[in-house]
Length: 338
Image (cartoon, rainbow, N blue to C red; front, side, top):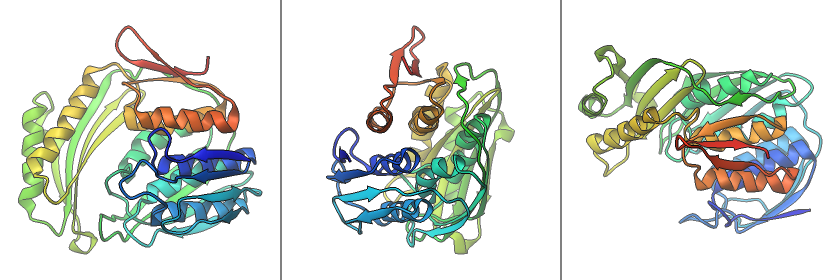
């Protein structure tokens, strides 16, 4: 049995999610201790427990010790069974993080699957739905499977109540090279808000417009959602290239001004646009798992985060693969198998 210290590396929930996915794919059981030991509130939170329960449901697995607040559990995988599943986090916990847990095992299964995920769709510390739909899934689809996702209802922190539906047509994963992102084709900045004053979104857009002066006027927009989907606010900055798309997100939060939120997001986007990287730091974390299961391929990214390096370490524990991060002369890092 593989033994994992959940406090190592970035010490967050990504260790749990990647271990669950890899266990289901490889058939190797594991035990994890010090779960989320690097976080202010360690242990399993509701969204992490839902991910464990989802892995058990699709994989006929057994799990000992998993509960809200638990610091360790043991997981023994069974056979992955495709089909129709519904998983509800029950809070504003992230639906996208639950999806990350079960997606790889299901897209390698022998029949299609359909998922309904309920909970948070736009909350901090997790990729929003638009990132999954337009940044992550198109690259996975290039590797062979066909995955489509639909946002039925937004779910913001702390209320939740969101819903996404995912259709998975499985196929073996083929290695791809993601090195040149190609020419910039379009940009957009959208401020979404629900049950909040309009001027919050308006101030975000005005700040983004000032800090991204090369973007055309028509690229900036405000979108009001029904009040019953709020309160909530998110700023989405999107740059679509010939071969890749990047989305930088700023989430509304009490105590953080609209101007500060937009400034941070715009500076991050400007930094990415100034680089030659194919993927940003958050997509790099997520691409490592499908690339590992494809047993090859490569991509360029900005300076690797601790999340990405930790993901590589967990992958090595289950597969023996040692992914390397090689700095290039242009400042990017090439991620590949040696």
